[in-house]
Amino acid sequence: MKPVRLLQISALLTIAALALMVWSMLQPTPLPVMLAMTVGQLLGTIAFGLYGLVVVRDLVRAWRARRGEKADA
Image (spheres, rainbow, N blue to C red):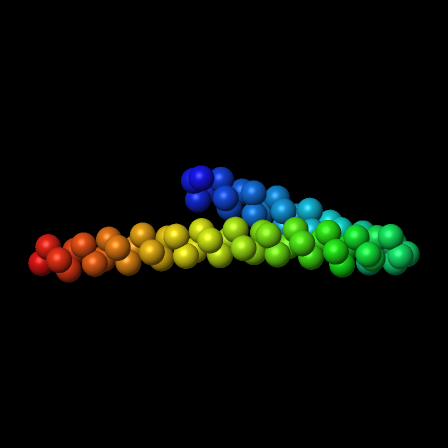
């Protein structure tokens, strides 16, 4: 999957997680709090993982390109 698409998915998951967190702050009853603590944390963790995946893939790509330049020199 393209990095831009992964970042878009990560951003949408982050917004959804933040919406759950805000809902639990505005209406501090058991249901919103439990959803924010479970579903919100799951969505935020997945979003962070996708972002980390894009960063690592970019670093590996840059490392391989740099290593190829040194081999040519």
